[in-house]
Image (cartoon, rainbow, N blue to C red; front, side, top):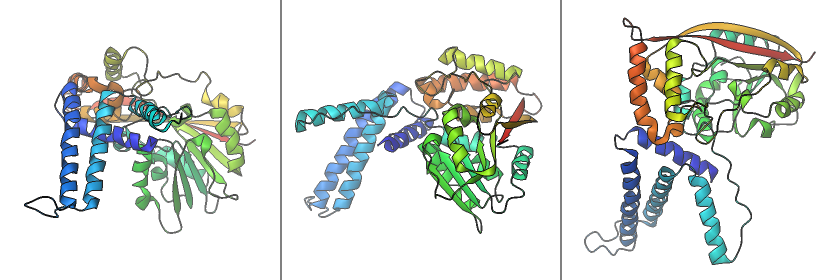
Length: 378
């Protein structure tokens, strides 16, 4: 059921992206749409029973099932538009009906908190910068002497790391908890699996990953910014059992547009704060709480205490519309986080970004650094 609500959130985001109506009108029309879909279900029943005097048997019971599904989906989208807590509200309401009508009091209904990246996957795949070629070459060298190496990519997102290392590994295991990201990552499989290569996508948290076999061991483990979101000590302890003796752990990532120091990125951050408040968000309902220990120190206290750091300087160029797409991929400024404020923010942000863009090229320049920590057993 959690997966169904994640798909509903994605569907709602897509519908909102194609609508120019105010949010209040979208909510009202969506509720009216339930009646329309119910009418089509009723028409299908009449047609399946042959009771339409002009058309006779115009529908099948399969058609009825499809129309009823449309009623359910329309209602779920309507509830999602009414409240960001739709999944929990539905679960509690269903539990109340079960208790009332069946005389059974269900146990506590526990619905996992929505992913902080709910609804971001299509934008994540398209607008994230990925792994620089120089960093990818460094990672490839770490397994250069290993025959048929295995990659474990934790917090894989839409698969940027496996894509950057395409062809290097005989086995790739991608681990990602967000359903939308998993769906996008699976679209990459035809491009990632070559002769003699196996690529698996695991829809689970890093802490809950189960190796595909008892003898399976990873030669390289990669985790980008997702290292912030995992239970670091727990995952590092598990990696001690999941990895080959000479394995490399790579924790890496660049700086987000929230933290870079270019003039236009500062103005962008201030505009986001104008709409959402001073605190950096982490999804629609949480505040970002950064870890208080440098990642190098965390690694140094694990079984992989031999840590080396590499930095790759990058200068990136963005169009204003690419910046908007990138923000839609983040946990701090996605369309889900903004909710009803998104259209107003988008218009204001585009005006501001166009004003800051280079007059000749229309582009915005960003100086960034891609950091890579490689950790080994001593």
